[in-house]
Image (cartoon, rainbow, N blue to C red; front, side):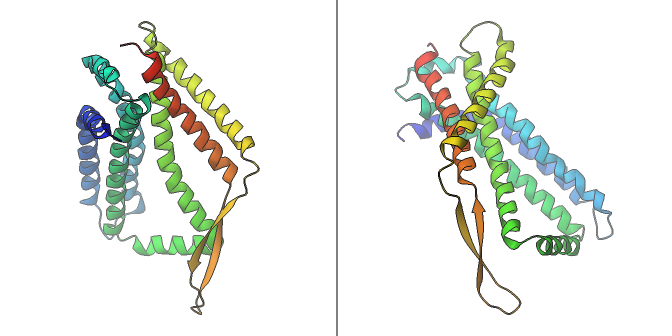
Length: 258
């Protein structure tokens, strides 16, 4: 990965201001509500601390566009295209930069939400809800749902970045009609759905895989549950994501003109 560190550092510099403003905004927002809740606070008082999770995606889209837009505005893209680095490495550096901001600010939002819930004294309520949920469904389904939700949140962030990056580079193929970003975004998203559907059918022969999860019971007898995942859906999505990312690298290396 020679040269990747320099590319990543350059891309982090281009989005650091937005990322810092985003982080400070999340911190101040959560701090405001954290200092105003107490043991007698009604449940709705912690709901505003969920808003940063929504805004993280909005800011994520802004950063995803900014990481390319910044270079085009300052003319740095011409220098980037002339360096002896493959297109996929340039695209990967930009993807890594925006995902770092996305993950770090998501963690910041999650910590703020959990601390506010804890200060509000909702620990008993949370434990009661979780216990009821576990009793209502099997432990395997609970673990699977939780894992899929967390992984899906992360993969959605990656997917948004990959699709927007490919769309932005498609838009840059012409010097006019920049409003075509919306059309290119729709087209790339449509192509990705086709890739995912094709991948699903291609990999339908792959058996589902299971992860054994150990857990205890009231009698302290060691047991395990199998958490089963649909391999064809996962592989189809990965294939679509990889092809969309490849499109970005191909455009950077072979199509965009210096």
